[in-house]
Length: 78
Image (cartoon, rainbow, N blue to C red; front, side, top):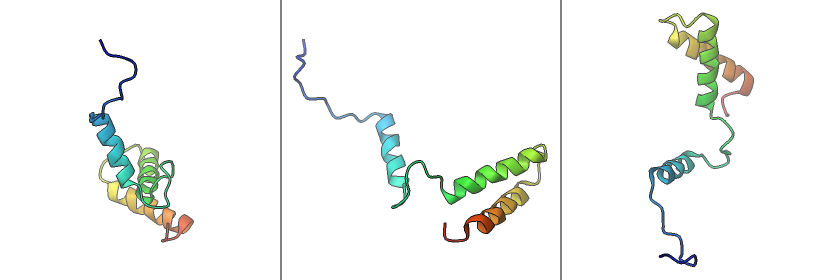
């Protein structure tokens, strides 16, 4: 029977590995809640595709349009 005073063991589950990897991917000065430039462009490209009914063959045009809009809105130093 274990007593309630034992120290918790170190966990090495996959969940903690994912959290560690997520923390490592954060850039200095960026909060976990602030989306990256690439995430913002990807979301805008998705909405471009949605507006045209997700017809195939326009993925690059959607991305470039979203990227250009991002640059107009935020500049190149985001």
